[in-house]
Length: 196
Ligand SMILES: [Zn+2]
Image 1 (cartoon, helix red, strand yellow):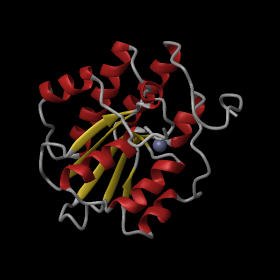
Image 2 (spheres, rainbow, N blue to C red):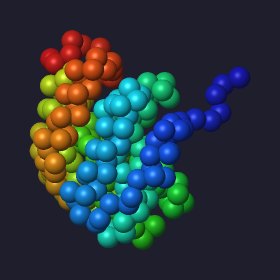
Image 3 (cartoon, protein in one colour):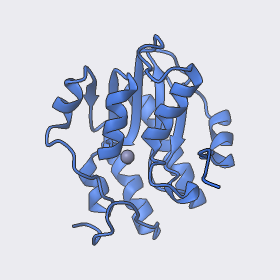
């Protein structure tokens, strides 16, 4: 029997964290602190990769959706935090396009999107992407960002998506280094040597 459904569930600790955490103020910095707090919660539990993302609607404080990287626990390379947050928000609103659902969506992500998540952003109907760590920060600890346009800002702008980088950048770099220093597994990409 071929598989007929895709199961990717947020871990119980993340659902508890999201239920407990106060919704952030509607600023990029407060939203990033919320997202980085999810990464740090995962690090404390030594569960999942060092990435988290959330989707917000305009100035609304409650996120539409939030997720962490679940590649290892879900057993699929597509379970990146940004992709999951976008998919959860879209399914919540019942629309494959957040813009068509009438949402001025902002994706807040702990590390800027990899090649796969950049594609997900382009098709998602979001209006802005806000990042903390840079792709090179993830690559510096061995993760693979894939083939991305040299000018990420221009690639997003061509689809009408604004990009803001380096929000709480040091804290964003810090969670990546903390993950590496704790011996967290590096995965993804084509299996080449980390850091190359
Ligand atoms: Zn990704």
